Length: 415
Image 1 (tube, rainbow, N blue to C red):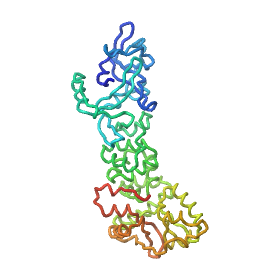
Image 2: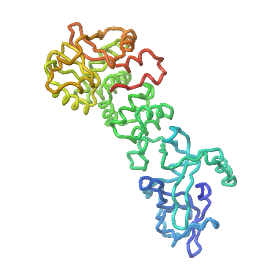
Image 3: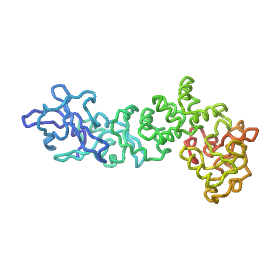
């Protein structure tokens, strides 16, 4: 094993006695859990040259030498032009590191590699004081503690450059395996440029869940770092109520630009919600709910649930209306009750007709206590004519009664 700070003291030498100082190591991060070094960079006559690892004939750790066939065969590189993979010193050292096991974030101060005669593999990240002392003393200090080491296969690194992902630079992409809420918590506690980069590492569907789970302040910082196409894609996938909260805080020209590009269905939902005051039930309700006519059979309703689930609509509580076209509310039905009912039964036979509703102009905090004390997933919101227009969910209710800085404001329990 050797630390990168020690390896950067090595010389690149060839049989003719030519010598050059090693300046960096290149790896292909996505090829292996512990990526092999695929190229070496070294300084010769004022230029930075690169050789493929295949040109290396051996490594002599005691002599601090990397032996190659011909130093002059190196190709000149500048500002990463000519570099295929990721540079350990140039890209990874000092990058922000996320340890996926402990959900910790820190900085990569040094790197540990497994060195043999014919290969080098990146094994771990050192984030401790010992690593810092090694850098300050240029390798004179050789101590360090294993507890400060993070196994490379369980970390993700961020450069603080959201555009780096689009450039094709290597990432583990393992951060996407964490639950959206945990990713959002991490994103709230790292610099906003790193948070924006983090969202670009994961699929848009999950990135939208992460974005809407962030604090509204962080949402605003992050979305400003995206190009219009990416911002619109995420706003389209977000829950309409959360997308409305975010769009309503953007500058008017930006808001109009995004709304014009959002697909019609989501755009109409957002515009409907923007009409209500922020402190009203209408201002915090969702309107991507599933409502089905009371004459529909259970079998047909289940198929509609599957369809709406794919569209990311709220389906835990099904709102039963007079018909598909007449939205007069008749009752509610839980997903469990729908699954337990017989295929040929009508929704009017299995629904709960005793429905308590909210007015969209009601105070949101007062309504929140009604939802919470009622211990229901969502409470219907109807207009003065009894027409169903949306629902106040339990997570929205929680967000109204807890302090503004609480992580519970972003909880998504039922959708």
